[in-house]
Structure formats: C-alpha cells, structure tokens
Image (cartoon, rainbow, N blue to C red):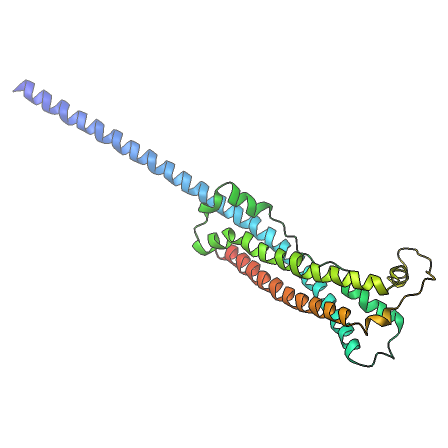
Length: 239
C-alpha cells in the first residue's frame, strides 16, 4: 500500500512537471510569436513611412513633367493656329519662340524607385497587411511601362520628327541667339532661313498635329499615374 501511494505521488508529481514544462514551452512560443509579429509590424510601419516619402518626391517630379508637357502642348497649339489663320502679323521672333517652345524641352518622368524595388526584390511584400496596397506595389512596374512607352515610342518620336523638319527651314543658331537673352553667347548668323515657310508646309503641319496628339495623350497618361501615386500615398496614411 505504501509503495502504491508513493508511486501515485511520484506519478502525479511527474505529470505536474510535464504540464509545467509544456506550459513553459507554450509561453515561450507565444512570446516568440509576439516578438516576431511586433518585428513584422515595426518593419511594415518603417517601410510605409519611407515609401510615403519616396512617392511624395515622385509626385513633385511628376508635376514638373506635367507642367513641361503642358507648356509644349500650348506652344504647339498656338503654332498650329498660325497655320490655320493669316500669319502676316506674326513676328519672326514670336514664331521662333513658339518653335522653340514646342521642341526645346524634352518631357520625361523618372521617379525614385529605391524603396519600392527593395520591397519587391527582398521579398518584403508580404509584410503589408492590406491586399490592395500589395497589389499597387506589385503593379508599379506596369504603370511605369505605360508611361515610358508613351514618352519614348510616341511623344519623343513625334518631337524628333519635328526637329528634322524644322532643321531644314530654320537657322537654329539665330533661334538660340534669341533664346533666354542669348545664354549661349552666340553671334548672329548671316545664313538665310525660312521659318515662315514652315507655316505653309503640309509635312510640318502633319508632324505638328502628331506632336499635339501625342502631347495630349501624354497628359492623360501622366494624370492617371499621378492619381495612382496619390492613392498609394493615401494607403500609407490609412494603415
């Protein structure tokens, strides 16, 4: 009887020890999981903060590209109007100014991608709890491809075509001499040019019309990606 009582006590004690060990393991696992969850949450917060900063800077760059494109488009439309109306009252200086306004400034948007590339390339995308934010981050490259295609394959091709036609009729040196108070410090060329002949050229009008159409659509593409970036920034604020 005494032996049986001792065995029962030892068995209860052993079971109690096992229970305590299991409880200790579960507590340790719980603490470890909590720490990991906290790390992931902190990492998400940090990435959201720097992602927001990156895209706020990108919005500034995009606004600059939109403004440049708007100015080019405005000059293009004014130049096109001259071809449709009596242009005898237009001065050579004004005509040259409009021509430069169309082709002088290249339009391009080159955003900062350091943070978003790190998120994707390092496999950090899964730390973001919001499904729609993950989708927006993963679709960023596709958004940029659309912008770059319109810039490089449409707008800049149309702009280069304009350049080629303008060079045939225009004394570029004299145009640059009048540009921004002769910032290039050039002397006037005596070689004759025929800028007004551009206003009677069907080839030039067609090239200008293509440029205007490309610039107009470029504005549409830019404003779409501006809205996309705006929504992404809002997502970083909401989480």
